[in-house]
Length: 411
Ligand code: AMP
Image 1 (cartoon, rainbow, N blue to C red):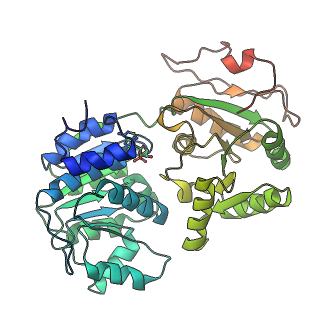
Image 2 (image 1 turned 120 degrees about the vertical axis):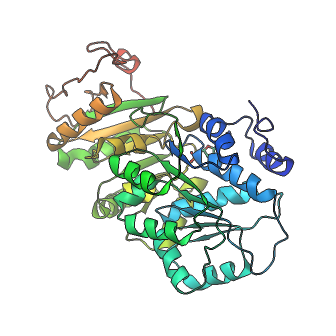
């Protein structure tokens, strides 16, 4: 299938062609026709599947049919609500690219940044607004944002918005938009609370599930290192020196942990940058830009700060702390091996984190390869129990390609 068959107009197809998109991804193929029919939709898809374009393209197409010239006082006709500032910026960047050959205007608002430029942008008028919930409600209260003309409302990363405590804000925003609007809900996971929200606000939605959230990204070489907690930093330095060639994202559970690791890596002459919720927005954006441009080889992040962010060509992900929620592991390792490339996910597991590895293996239905040959072993006998479900992809005892090769491995 190609984009023309999806009935997208020439200016949009031209922008996609210039961006190098040759054909729609699966989520785009399935969601675009439904959205163009103005139906409500629930989409369960991870980042990396092309889900932003899956709603951005049909929204632009619907707006395109009734577009007018850029002018002051333009009404917001599509509203995208998402949990974090970085995501909001990224989504709006996508809209800008796809609408480059149209007259449609897009804008973005988020907290933690000066409100004045955002007010000025809104006064000029936009067709599409991407927003985080708090700043949106704030500007609505000040009468700067008018949601009376919203035709399409998108709730992106709905599960994370609920995890971050935005449920009341999201419901309030939904009520501020007109009754007859089309609502699109995108979520990486579909826990019960997301279903409840969907049931309360969507009208006869179509349900699309693209890849189960338990399936770890294809092409990711997953390895676990059992290591005493105090030795994790040494293991990290050892791998950066000897095994990891390119760019790396290192995940830590806490903001304090992120800062501490960044200082240690900088002291060891690694160009590292970091993002977490306590950092000013401008510093977070600066760090992301440096990492994206390759000026910094290492990005250290908490989960919330990094969720959904599209960073290309990441060679490896290090789980410095094992996430206590198994789904988080899937999100983290989805940063590498995007769009068919291969990558590595290296997880450092200390004695108190073994149960988390068990949970992860159960979720992804895969026994993660254990690298025993490293200088800081926890306990040579401390292999995790392999949890197999019916139809498990890896049989116990079957050696992976990595384990067959004894030579030093580069990621
Ligand atoms: P997302 O899941 O929206 O974060 O998108 C992941 C990445 O896929 C982004 O870098 C998009 O630019 C890219 N992408 C989206 N749709 C396509 C497509 N049809 N062909 C190639 N790349 C795409």
